[in-house]
Length: 300
View (spheres, rainbow, N blue to C red):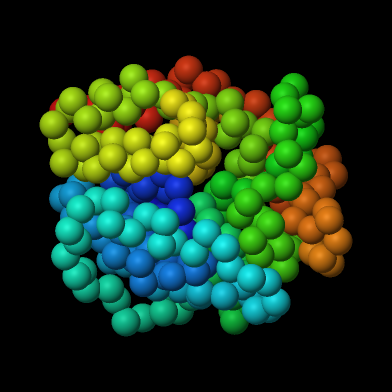
């Protein structure tokens, strides 16, 4: 049984919601809590709580984290309002008073070697936890993050050289990657190879399950926004590695973050190193992942 904390910027696109749903529907995982980060963390917390409620997992508590970047030196964009109202009239859910950073520190330090952090948004909360309590980096079991891009795989030329979650708060990313914590970096090198399409969306809708119906609405809105009928499942891939690590091929590396406000700000530079603290994902079994994702969500 894997004990996890999901740290999310849910509300800006659809894959955070899909990742949370996958975790909810995986009995192999114990969700210790969900923390929200970046922008309107209250809206994000309410969206997370709504999905947990629809998935009959209101036992999982939600904690609000940091709204601004770690140095408060960068404008917040994709603040979270984009997801507001998508799920219909929302209840007002009770969000925990304990700050997300305090919750992360408390949970990791009280359970050394047992808690996996799954950040699927900017790394601000994780960096703040490590700054506040450096021993978090030693006591965490591992960090499996959706972040970054190396352009070292076979799809290199089709990829951007900067990824959103890192670009939003590169200084925070630098703290996390430099902490020495054991990290699996699930970047665009692999996430751009795992897609869902309108047929998958329709299967979720037709299942009749309240959580899946909500997901199908989120997917539909996202498809309209990007003007496409398919989308990459970035964040669910990170969660899926807790269920089947063999889905990806990795290389050990040290990762350095550019953060000095030049055009390359947010770039993740992976230097292959057998003694590095980062397992960088470079390839993925796409069809196996799709079967796992839809199988968990549609399982009766």
